[in-house]
Image (cartoon, rainbow, N blue to C red; front, side, top):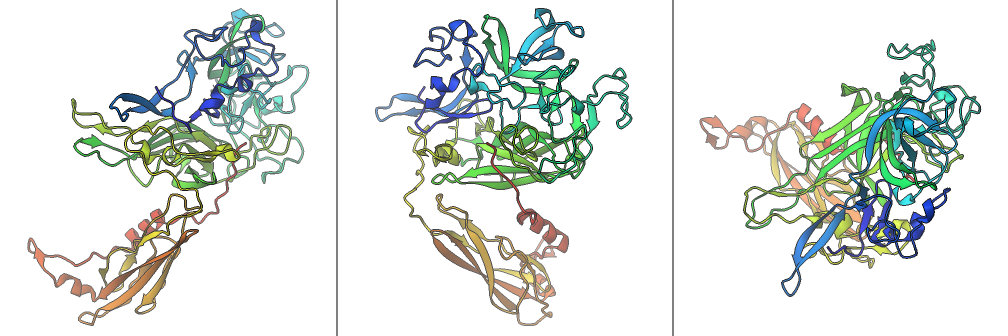
Length: 602
């Protein structure tokens, strides 16, 4: 298979170029000795079966690719890769079970074995060993056998089922409390501030409770320490049930353990409604790619979307945004796909955005779920910010699952994967991770013909504008203008819109800076001369300004039924929308009036 130049691939929680994936310096262990001298020699990655020494686990690492079969100039088939899914090991090495022992000295969780007695050391009888892959100490002691497979230190992949960030104490809380993973964040059953759990013994750590408001909920970490404190992470305890996934590693003695990039604890911890911080997590993403039909091949394409996640404040709405990237500058912007109400779900804290079709194109590599409680910035561990530098209020996740067109009939040629409709592949992603050389179109292109690449020379084409065809409405009707703008792919930021009235009695335009403004038509008596209103749409970006016009004729309301009839009933020239339908369309098409707050994770 051919991996094109400019390929960016997503690991479980990080992004790499194809070249970086094979850079041994990026896989160097952190705070741990090489396991039995098994550090990869120079030029080897520790991923391939023929590396010496061989990888930790057999049959080593797996990679899933999506591509097309493309013929070269000589007619030979070439298998060209378009997307690379996360690299995993032995089916992701996933597991689940109850924490039976915690090795605070080394940060190991023992899962699924016999429960250790108080003061007893952890051992093989306590089950599988799991250690969070954490090279910076975000969730406990810093350690990583291979940072390529670490957890997401900006959008925590270590959290409760409700999305609250978790941690492993750096010291035994029976003797010394960890201020970044305080035992006070696990109130005990029987604490009169919280409802008693009938499934737990009195004095056992609660597994479901609501945090009180923090002393300061505006993003500044100060105020007296009162526990539980929503500004700090939640310590895991013996008896908690966790689901984990990661890679198999060996310690200095040659013993196996799971280096986890994802740990989800079956704990229901929520934050105070309307207060910061509120934490968000995305559980599942699925997006269609739409795509034009291939001549001669009957196919089904979809642009449906499916997003599932959790929030610690289900009283606040959640925005689902696509992350668009300028292919020349790398500048990012958020494109609102929809808003969901977690309070409507039977499972507390869950949000679901499952729509069979809508304006969700073009597909993007990453999405963001953002709470209406607002966001707080991330910071380095120990600095200002919530949950040991994680920040709060949003969760940014890569999308690994796309729905490509499928054929209707068995036996006919399979529709090719429509990578040309994915701007991050067809146009590129701008400077490499913000500072390096431009990441352009995949080369060779996994299809035929290759789409036009982005033109980053600083020149481009002014917007192409349409104000729609002229139409007729009735007296006093609620009217919506329908503009359309097509921009040069290098235009950034996107165009600004402005509607102005050019003819007829003055009306008030609602949303004149959107593509779909509305107004109320003037009153025209039956039998009177129609009134003509003229409107001009202007779109401007850095490449120029374009305009288009539309005329709206307003006639007496009963004049609309004086035309031809169908099936014995009058057929109007144009249907005047009801006030309710007009309001609904305006709500759907207008951008949210709420100021957008977003900051990129580290």
